[in-house]
Length: 203
Image (cartoon, rainbow, N blue to C red; front, side):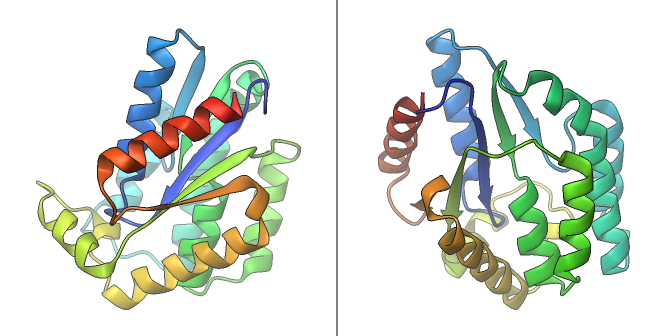
């Protein structure tokens, strides 16, 4: 049980993480529980500008450039994150583990470089709990096909997403106490209830 936890929602494209974070915000509003929500990349006006640059389908950045842009967007959020740390519940749509899963396991960027910059940026800011949403390749493809528009990170090959999801699982296995794995191939109402019950227990 945590007083004002930092809760992160992770997962590859089409895994349902954004749906669940929206559902959790509805629950918190209903219960009149104070919270703040971020997404990565994005969050504040400067980070959202960087987000547009990263996700633009016309861009084709080198993998290290991509990493630095993601971390630059995070850096723009750090002051706000630290401002509300332990004062409000903080919900984050993707965070540090996403950078490791995508940039290291997916694109092959040096993990030591990622960790060095991350540690420099966030210092003593710690994640209390993470929901990892897993999805099968077929369901991911079906869900992406339903989207009105796709960004650059929605259009990698299937091997990339497989590598990223395996990377997430490796991270989760090293941090079992703070991870809850959600099988997004199951009934969505079942998963919604599971997430909300976990939130209740955390609070």
